[in-house]
Image: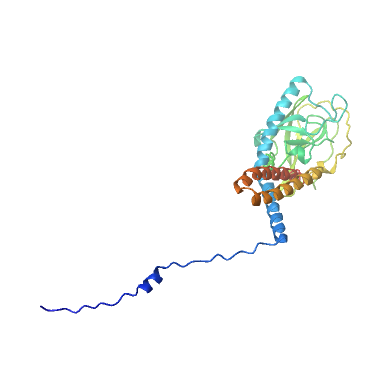
Length: 313
């Protein structure tokens, strides 16, 4: 019987154990940021949230706000026309100035597909709702120069394509005195002045922002001549160029600064409360409680902040 030699080597069990042993990572304790760093971080986060809400409000929420406002205003105008109580001058039946935001006319421009309720006043709060009538000018259909101002991009962007109007296009406006018809003359800028009117002549001036949307470089003006019979014009209660600075083209309205400051203070308090709740409560509960409150307050701040932007934006 023949014996065969075999190559057997001793197995190093200790080496195998070391190979199987997993590498353990030790967690290094993180140094918590200082109080100053935390304050700056929270402040920048709030500022970023507010800016995002402003952009979101201008591009998305404002369109819905305009739609709901027009739906409400159309019902009010329809009722006042049926009752015969639609204002036909700068004052109402009691001799008081027509309240800002009151629906006074219905503007129709078939070429642009515009069917818009016109409200009294041209400040930011009024052009949010629809096309605004400058209060120191006569109402549509009456002799003189009627000025209507509308947004270019935000809050419906009613006059976004105003530059597409050409000479000869028709415009009709329904007021408490009837339907006034205009025919477009042409376009111009504020630096170009038209000659004055005489007698019963009437002219409609449509004003909006000019340039890239949300970045106006000036105002665009479209003029139209009154071609229908003029309506009687009541005695003016506001002198020409007698409106405030906030009602002129590309002006901002600072009347809401007080409410904006209060809302921002509330937002800061909510942020502080959310920070404490994050550490003391269950985190899911903190999210559920403070996220809706902070978002709603941020949108309210953004809405007030939009009043500081040009009224034709």
